[in-house]
Image 1 (tube, rainbow, N blue to C red):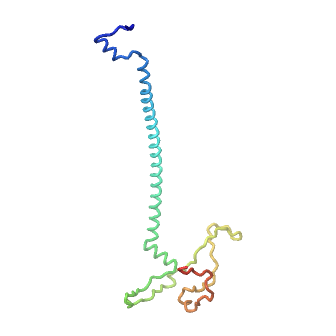
Image 2: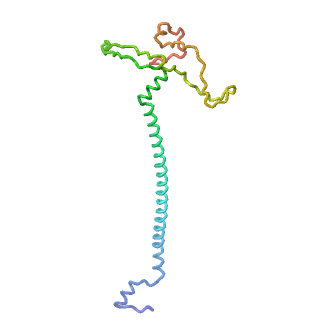
Image 3: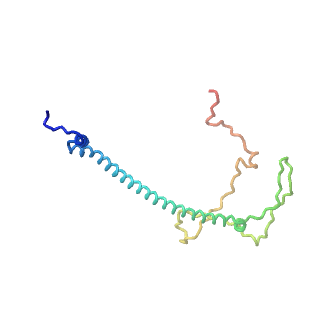
Length: 192
């Protein structure tokens, strides 16, 4: 017989339910408590990172919206300028400044080669009504040391000799001759 009295009945059943050593229960709960603390800490850090990423995205979105508004305003201003330059009265005024005159009646060429309509020359306007065409103004990127120091004085180009007709023009097409020397780099022949 052992030194422990045997428990019988109800007391024996209770003794089986309660473990004999109290330190084993605390040791069994320690990994569970650590797991819960790690999960809560990781979730808290994850929420903090997510919140900072969302706020950074909100700031970037605000900057992009501000930039979009600025670019939209600039686009609208440029479109207004284009519309002002494309207006018929502005085009007519600029054409007159360039010495252009309204065209005459047009003639149309049909697909079969016949001409439809009677073409007429452009009407000449009186010389008093038209302004002399101005040569284009060229602004020099380098200041001229001999010129007076006026900030708005444009530099005008010197008149040049008339341009020679190019070989592709109709007047030079008849006088153009084929080159007498073969090309320096012959093209490769297929099959070699």
